[in-house]
Image 1 (cartoon, rainbow, N blue to C red):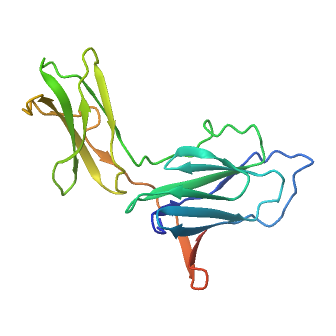
Image 2 (cartoon, rainbow, N blue to C red):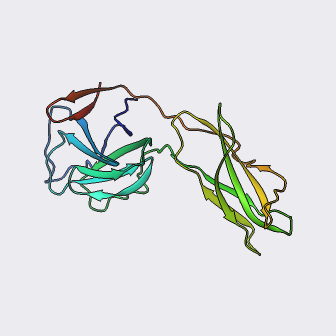
Image 3 (cartoon, rainbow, N blue to C red):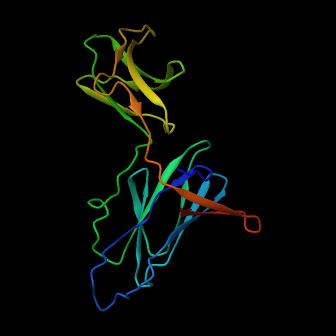
Length: 216
């Protein structure tokens, strides 16, 4: 998988290819390229393709498998924090009724939703959530306030690295700052974020400072 800054692009899909009077047949197999530019934390991805030019053409955008919306232009900008990586995918269709959620491409989550049950202790004020990445040490990633009568809690992790093995644990804390028994997240003790690795080529244009990505 080739990386362009923080953006990782995979194959664009074409759907809604049902024969109709609006469709234009082509003998030459269509091609797809991604052009990625960056200005600070704003990443702009442009899809350049040779599918038939039908109006309107809808571009459905996904980041890490999460649907981000639709455009009728083959271009969209995204915000990414410093040091982050993300998969950007586009589904191209001519169908105005296309279900973008039911037909979403397989995604590789960039964050983990950590969930746990309430502590049986009666003096809990907070829950401290820590994260461990392989080769590192436990790091606090957040605190969630305890609420009377609430049984389930959750916290969304920071964006995860591409090939890290992760674990999480939760510690109840009372109002005085005393920590209780540490509990690991038993249902998801580790998380390994790794995607497939299609073959890509890329070229850099010195004049425009743009990188063009295409399937090899």
